[in-house]
Length: 188
Ligand SMILES: Cc1cc2nc3c(=O)[nH]c(=O)nc-3n(C[C@H](O)[C@H](O)[C@H](O)COP(=O)(O)O)c2cc1C
Image (tube, rainbow, N blue to C red):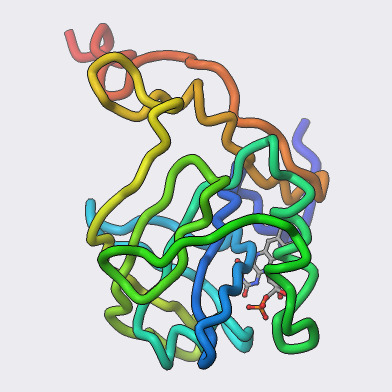
C-alpha cells in the first residue's frame, strides 16, 4: 500500500554544488546549490535566483562549480545560509583559500577536490523556471581523487549529497552495478 505524500521534490540524491564567483571588487563568494545538473557533456544548468552569486555572474560572465566533500560539510552548509549581500566577508570567515582560475574570471577553492571552470552562456527564464547555464571549459581535480589511470575515482571524492527528505547532507554511497552494463542480461 503506497501512501500519498502530496507535492514534494522527490528526487534523491541532489548534489551539493559550490558555486564560486568574484564580486565587483574581486572578492570571492561561494554559494551552495542543490538544484542544478549537467546537460549534454559540457554544460551545467543551475536553478539560482536573486543571490549575490547571480549579481556576480552577471558582471564577470563566469563561475566555478566544485563538489563539496564530507571534510567540509560545515563550510558547505554555511555557504548556503550566509549571503555575501549581508556578510561581505562571507568567504574569508571560513578560512578556506581561493586562487583565480587560469581560464575563467572566477575563484577555484583549494580545499574542494573537484572543480568545473565555467563560462556563463545564458540565463533561461520562463513562467516556471529561472536557470543560469554555463559551459564547462575545464575540470580541475586533486590527484588524491584520481585512480591509477588519471580518471576521477568517485569513491575517493567523499562527495556530499543533499537529502531533501531529511534536510541533511549524506556522503555518496557504494557501487551497485555497472551503468550501461547491469541490465545487459535482460537484452538477450
Ligand atoms: C542545502 C542548500 C541548497 C541550496 N540550493 C540552492 C539552489 O539550488 N538554488 C538557490 O537559488 N539557492 C539555494 N540555496 C540557498 C543559497 O545557497 C543561499 O541563499 C546563499 O546565501 C546565497 O549566497 P550569496 O547571496 O552569497 O550568493 C541552498 C541552500 C542550502 C543550505
